Length: 311
Image 1 (cartoon, helix red, strand yellow):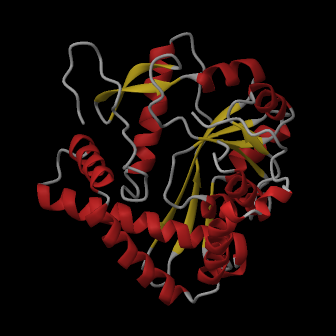
Image 2 (tube, rainbow, N blue to C red; image 1 turned 90 degrees about the vertical axis):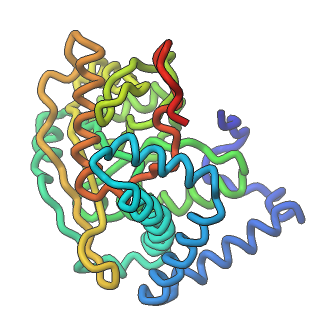
């Protein structure tokens, strides 16, 4: 669990100038240099770094391969390995795309397509908030940036343990998102939804059963959070699926944002049915671009009693 900061988000502290932070400052400067490189160099670097990470981050590689084996049983072992390596490459591409969104946003000009924006506009025209159900995409904040070209999004975030890194990321994200809402700030989240805001929310990770239920994910029982049901019930907001992904030739990519109609009868009276339907939405999204998802997280670490462990 991340430690609660004792400062305001994005606030500079004079202690950040102490020697213990110099390594991070050097890293931040290096990231800014990477952001100004041409895309032709960025994607080559990302490919090399992704392959290097796939070979050497053994635990993450093992988890990724196992997740793909479980979720895509129709793939043979060669396909699993190829796609697992591509997950790491896409993750590194996502780092460069995020840096471009923070420092060189004009790079995205003419590269973005939006479908279904009217679903958010209709909800807000009725005075309702929009809880945008999405995934932990490897596009990271680049996805938020392309969305921000069409509507005004907020985001739920988890503070970084390192205060300098937290300030850096928070300030960079402030150029994209109007509001960044701490994942523990339930009151703030409710307030913004009641005020008609559109908030990107990803209910796609395993936080155990204290915050969820076991529901099928790609046909496999997975601990599925249900907090969004309570948010929707308290705020009368619309649950609107949103997915963004990279499309086309990696040397000249396009970015697509798909917004689907509001999910009917969510929340219902059946918690398990709601969790199942939410997982089906995420499954449908992930099948569009399977390797642009953070499969290196242990999505199935919680197992039903009597079931074999997956990892």
